[in-house]
Image 1: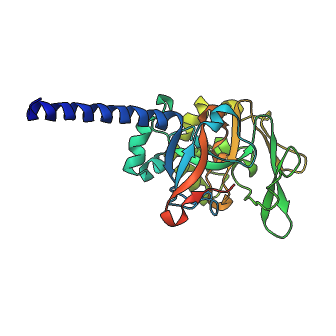
Image 2 (image 1 turned 45 degrees about the horizontal axis):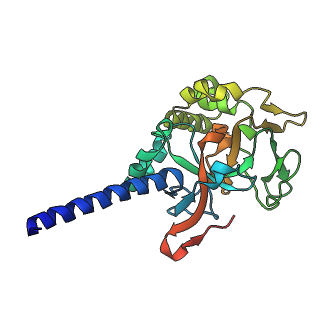
Image 3 (image 1 turned 45 degrees about the vertical axis):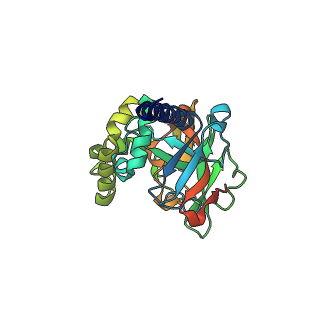
Length: 266
């Protein structure tokens, strides 16, 4: 074999190896593992802004998550602001995502409600905060988790307010109206509401009891998520239910920054 033939042979073999690596790597990315960079503080102190997580996907393809689990899921709408925060690596890797989620971003939150569960927020005396109750009881592990009464727990009309803020312009404060307008535009929320959420925005799933406390029943085939950092978390209180099929997986490792590398606690 001449030097030229040997060179071409080596080049061919390296080309095959690269193709196999790309195929194998893509299969791992699609079916087993992927990574995610956290742009916001919605899960402080569990997960911090700037953390990069290693996500394990197999477990939640074979079994459903439990109340209290931290879960990665596709937002059920296009979040223009979050898209602008993605790093080039994340944008590239999301090209391998299912076509129905193209242009969407991944959120990380804690699962607080499964299909059929009834959720409510109970005030904690002297704190100005609320404790979550699921089916009338505080779930194990939530005894010291506190939430802000916001979004749908503030008023049963909230999701419609998000979709059509101009309908409520004269009955809400100026700052609240600007909040609604901002998110309506950032999420194209009126489109999402009409095409999807409106079906569940009724007294079967959201209502006020005799004391004025808002209760939310999770529809079949959906989950309800909230962030640990309740004051800073944009979660299901604001945008509604998340379909079960939007679940990506569970955060397994914090791989960046290196000084915090390790297994994530619950």
